[in-house]
Length: 384
Image (cartoon, rainbow, N blue to C red; front, side, top):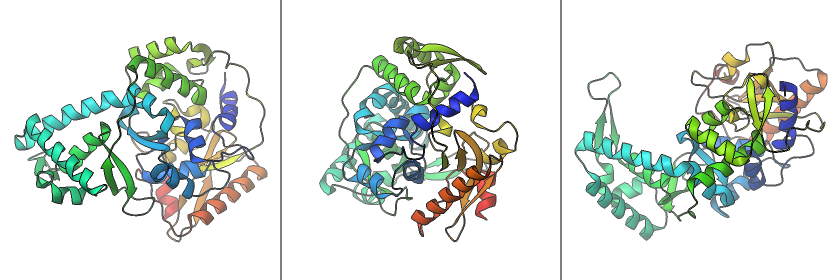
C-alpha cells in the first residue's frame, strides 16, 4: 500500500472531505481516537477544522457542560481529550500505568527536595480533596490558600545553571488528576488558557489492561491504519512486546508498505473510495499528523517542509493539507489574520481552496490570538 492510497483514506477516516464534515465535537473525537490536548487551543482548532460549522462553542459545551469529552494523561505521558464512552479504555490501556509512574516520581521529588514521605503526601492530598469538595471548584492558588503545604517549595537542579524553585502544588495536582481523583474544569481565562479550575473527579469504570490495550489498538487501526509496529509503539508509548500482543489480539492483518510491514483491521485492505478534493488548515499537534512515527508518506516528495514544520523533538506546527498531503504551513499574525505558505504546487483549485480555508479560519477566530506552545520555524516566520 503506497502513499497515495494512504492519503486517500484520510478524507474518509478523519472527516475532512468537503461536504462530509462532522456534526459535533464528540463525533470528531471518536473519529480521531483522541484529540491532542497538551496545548489547550489544539483541541478547539482540531475540532473546528472538522466541523460543518467551525467554532469553539460545541467543544466548550462538550468539555464543561455535557462532559461528553474527558481529559486524560495517557499515551506517551501526553494530555489527550477523548469521548466519555471511550475514556475507560484509554484509562485502563494507558493512563493507569502512567499515573502509577507519576506517583513514584512525585514521591522521589518530595523526598529529595524536602524530606517528605508518602504519609506527608497522603495528608496533603486528603486535605486538598476536602477543601475542593467544600468549594466545588477552585484554582491551584485557592487550594494553596486552603492547604498551605501545597505552597511548600523545592529547589530543583541545585547548583546547575538551570536551577529553579518550584511549588509542590503543580506536581501534586498533576498526580491527583492523572489518577482521576480531581478533574480540570473551565479555565480562568478563555479557551486558549491553561489556568484551569479543579473539581473532585469521578472514578472511571475499571477494565482489564490487556483488553483495553487491544481495543485501543483496534480504534487506532480503524482511524490510522495502515500503520507499522513502530508507529503504534511511538503513539502509545508502550513496549514493543505490549504492542505486538495487542496487535495479535486485535486480529490485525499485515499489509506491505513502502517502509515495511503495516497492519490494518481484518478486511480493511481494499482501496479507499474516491472522494471530493479537500483542503484543511490543521493546528500544531493536530492528531492527524501526530498519528504516526514515520511521516514522510504524507509530505511532498520535494520541499523543505520537515525542517520548517517540525520542531527539534518532532512536534509538528500548523499545517496546510490538500487531499491527504501536507502542502504547506500557516500561522496567525498579530492582527488576527491567517497567513499561509504553500511548498507544493497542486494547481489552481488547491490554491483557491486553501485560501478559502485560511479566510474562514481567520474569520471565526475573530480577535482571539493563538500561539502554539511548541513553535516551529515556519510558524514563527509567518506570524511575524
